[in-house]
Length: 450
Image (cartoon, rainbow, N blue to C red; front, side, top):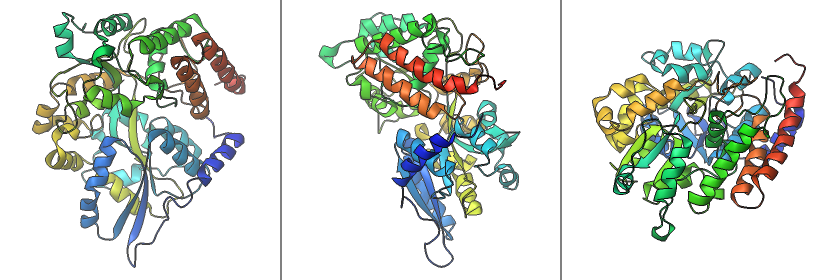
């Protein structure tokens, strides 16, 4: 992995300029340290903000300032700040995509000494696949708030009413056929919800797993772009056709949040997405489908075990002037006790999943998560970002490529696919342009011996 090219850094600097004033460091009165945290505005993170006054009450010398952003915006602004040494944030929410690359670049504080010096924190309690994905040279550089893979969520009641049975390990063709049977626009019911919103972390998350299981890949071992290969063409045509025919209304602008709303409100029969969504669907304060949802492994075609691996995690940029205070907050938000706090005060289905093994030993959580805890752990455990494809590749990552250029490359390719879903161009036209983007990036790696 390489540091971001200077051209990319220039673009990031422009993005960062729009973030000026998002959070000043310091301040807060004599003896009070203000810790500024850039955080993604997903539901579990909003819960953390809601509970954070309790941390401040326990730590009167620390004041928390959150900059809460939607996923695409958060990725852009956090990357811009960290890559350019902007220093706006003391703690940032990143993932297993950024962590090893930014650690190698020297942009993140090595958290291992802080972890080792924190009694009871117990990093060995993190699910191994997640802990390893957030490590570089054997040290953790970010700590997981939650971890996830992907699986298929489906309405058990609707399948039963239609006389259908979900296979224990469904193929994508079987899922498409079920979607066709259950799709009923006259009743406001989509056969399936699939992301169509542009963004390397939006549509490309599920779509890349489809490429992988159809036998496709982004590059061959020599970094020759493969986005017009027969396997990728088949995968892309399948995805676009399925969501256009049986998907949710407004699919080209639907991401995780939009699909969560559609499915939880009873407007879709199936949804393929992040395992973390399960807790939202079983929360009676948010969902109309509590107790009606079944969970099946990520659909497959040629490649077994198609689910992705991802973790929203917290890291400290090396520019932070408040490392100890930032770590005190981060260690609170990712601790064993935090899971119990969420469960007791907000509901056990809302506990951040997929990070700590001990969470799955809490009796109240076991009861609340009975339907999805096992499938979640199985999906995370079977995800191997070192071997994401059937054929050999020069990159790691399942729903992303572990190279710095993927933030821009993935976003550009996602825009082409979203346009195909919107009917603005054909799949072949989308892939032709995507191939050009990928070939340009691939050429910079050829001859490096990577």
